[in-house]
Image (cartoon, rainbow, N blue to C red; front, side, top):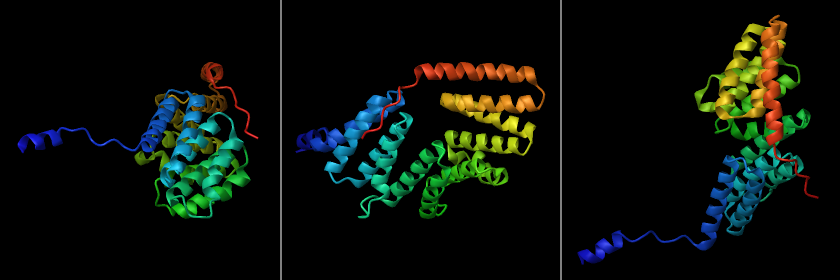
Length: 264
C-alpha cells in the first residue's frame, strides 16, 4: 500500500487540456517576444492568444491579450488597429469583460489619443476610466499622471504640477510611471519659469528612463534639459546634452521597427 501511495505522490500533475496549453504557450511566447523587442512577432502571437482565449470563452484572458495586442500595435504605429482592439472591450454591451479590463482599455485608448495629439478626444475617454476606478484601482496613479499630461497640453501648468507630484514620489507607481510624472513636473516647472527645479526633475526622470532602457523618453529628458540649460545661460552644457539627444535619436531611429499600415 505504501508503495502505491509513494508512486501516486511522485506522479506528474495531470496535463491541461490541449487548448488551454496552447493559449498559455501563446501568452508566454508573445510576452517573451515583447521583452526582446520583437514587436512584429509579438503582435502575431498576441493575436493568436486572443483567438485561443475567445474560443474557450475566457473573458479575462481575452481582455488581457486584446490590451497587450493593442499596446504592441500602438508601438508599431498602427494606432487605428490599436483603438479598434480596445473598442472591442469598451463598446461591448453584454458585460462579458471584467470591470478592471474596461478601466485598462479606456486608459490605454486615452494614452493613444494623447500620443496622437487628439487631446479633446482623450479627455472623455480618460474620464470614463477615472469614474470606474474611483481612485481605488491599480491604475489610479497612472490615470492622474495622464490627467496631468492632458492639463499640460492645454497650457495649465499649475494643474499639471498638482496632479503629477504625488505620483512622482510614490514608489507604488513603479519606475516608468514615476519617470512620466517627473517629466511632467519638470515641464510644468519649465512653463512656470522655475528653471532650476525643472532641471532637477528632468535629471531624475533621465536616471529612471536610462534604467528602463526607454530611448524615446531619454531623448525627451535630454531635450528638456537642453531647453532649461539654454534659458539658464549655460550654453556649453546645453550643447553637450543636445549632442547626447541627437545620438540617442539617431541610434533609436536605426533600430526602430518599420511602421505597419493599418488593416482595412
